Image (cartoon, rainbow over all chains, first blue to last red; front, side):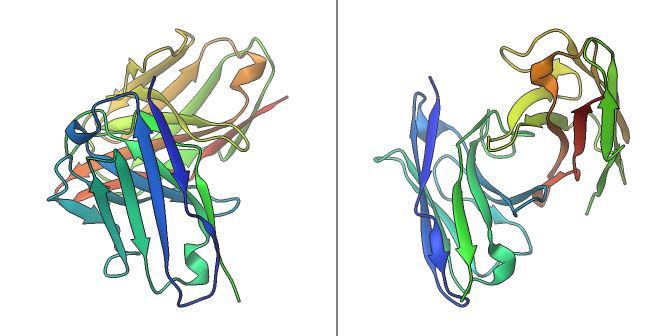
Amino acid sequence: EVQLVESGGGLVQPGGSLRLSCAASGFTFSIYAMSWVRQAPGKGLEWVSTIGGGGASSYYADSVKGRFTISRDNSKNTLYLQMNSLTAEDTAVYYCAKDPYGLGSPHFDYWGQGTLVTVSS
Amino acid sequence: ETVMTQSPATLSVSPGERATLSCRASQSVRSNLAWYQQKPGQAPRLLIYGASTRATGIPARFSGSGSGTEFTLTISSLQSEDFAVYYCQQYHNWPLMYTFGQGTKLEIK
């Protein structure tokens, strides 16, 4: 059974940093691209970033480019999102999501339960 | 950037009736269209991908259609567990980008 468990969310001040983690199990982690998708309170879904299975290729939404870094440790079956220079607009539940194929999958087949990031002073 | 527009924003339907949700893309996305269901406090769940293929374990009452810029999600006979928010999502392969619609809330009439 595929399981994705996010952690690392919390309250952070504007301008601060936070690193999210997503522990994966139930599938061969290194084969699949992985993504982060966020949802601001009461709002819709917004794609944040995607990384290929080997970790060499990554892509970002314009809203986070230059501030967020996606990475993965295939030996630990874990996906990360390093978030820097956070603003109130980054307040959201952050979901990790599995791509069904390699990089460039057209959809996300499994999602974690999410971790809440609140940016506030 | 491709903009996805869902309509209506809210749809009120009685249990047992048919629900039809629409999603329009600002430019052609071919068949690269997925639908997700999200219940309060839960993660989204993949329902349909490739515009019309049901994901694993999704009941047959859910069906998707369309290609290019116009897409439809139909729920043939609404069950109580189907009342939720539904999102469409498109994929652009270069540069890699995913865009969601703003969602349609399906509520009990």
